Length: 288
Image (cartoon, rainbow, N blue to C red; front, side, top):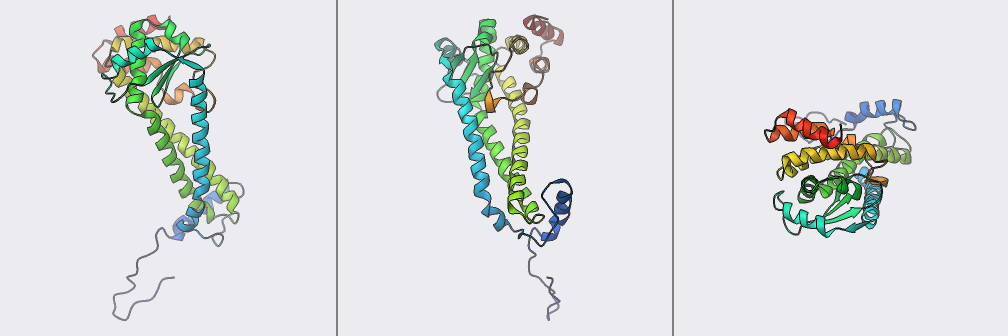
């Protein structure tokens, strides 16, 4: 409640509470129209950040479960692969070129019918059919790309961005929804759902940028081999019934990656390779 003017004529100089409850009134009213179980009752649960923080352990617990599922999926893939000293020797050679520090990542080969390569923190897993389809220069280019992911700690960066976006969206949405719902459980459920969506969108947007960065750094080893390798990967993806990323790690390639031909042309432009020459190499490797 706003106080009247002071006797000294300076008026009320007390700082206003921020954010003000009224600032979220429109948000709550709109939420009431589109979200089942939410009603525009501004006299319901107190909309204070202290109240939101009381529910934060639930968000942290949900985030821990998501992380556990992702780590478990990675461990399953790694457990189904075997070490490859030959590929490890290649990684040892490209590691300094991609800016790697410390011990190079381990390299493993996964059997089966998959056709992909993926990096989990400091472990690179390459599908055996993909490795068998490439010559040594192309395989070196693929391992340089994956080594760039390891050198940039892209796995940890992605998990940190997902977690930050998840918690930020949870707090913001719960702050709005608590004032619009008389049912804290409903508000909590919707806040967790919105947080998961926000985390996934943020992580997906970041993944595309990290892939472009890995393309850029990995191509320093051999740009033409990188272009040819992208053609092989495009062919393997078309022939393979499923990608290496399984379970909770399975993400459509179109979300995290640009189309292979666009990646090849970007590398060509960055290294002054004529587009016609790059396209010929890509198509020859892709069998087109």
